[in-house]
Image 1: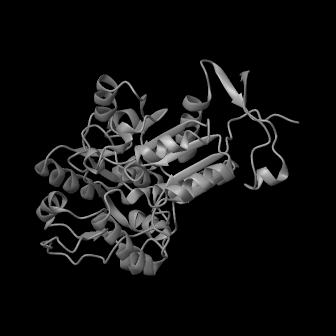
Image 2 (image 1 turned 90 degrees about the vertical axis):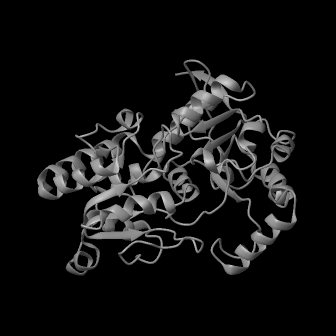
Length: 374
């Protein structure tokens, strides 16, 4: 039996919303790229695709009528764990998996059970990720990581920023039709809510294009036409390349963290103008790899400046893209999770070469992991 000399554990991903450009989708794509045996368990009710009306109605009814709707899929999840025999269980976000379910999972597997929470603090819901006793929780906001580390002892909290997928977030060539349809002074691809809309309302002097989710409860007040929904994959890459400036207004609850768009814009080679937060300088050099703003007045002045100096904006975008592709990929982040959860001290885990069936994701692993000096 030959041993692997790099970390490629057998990973069960527990999440939802696995359609293009979600975290689950990119994690699965990256695990496949890394040749890690993997499986995805969707915790939602199994009634068609995520965006189907039937699935949306079923989940709405379940969330309204049931006290713990997230446990509807518990038995199926337990069967999946028993069948797949993971060496790492990776829970995405964490607000859709009950601590009661996590406790039952531990009766079936000795694999580390960890959570990668890629959202800001207002989405924590019932705070399941704090009460599940995970072996590790990975947070994208340094404020949350620091607070929870000081106050909670049942779980280890680690800072892990979001990332880009170089196979998706990359330079895409534009044809004349793309340029005519997508070119603008400023674009933004983000969910619309009142805080963000209030900022965008002040940009009336610029040619602005707005993509992203637009909830039906929001009174739309922007002077420009909304582009009609989310922009994904190559369409997103094209929109970011066509715009002179890609605006990234962070949610007010991103106290000291960055959203996924920060890394996606950079990966696509767009010139990014982002809300200033302390952690930004850890990942991109402000003024060199991205530009930032700290007030609405500053935002307007920055837009005016870079519209007058497109060469400077293009140089910043190129440096930001190089940094994103070198340091801020899903492969980088997953290897960090593996390093923390599957290595002890300066040792690394090597897994025995699995059978052909196990390599294809069928049947149990061919042996327990062993610790070897790196």
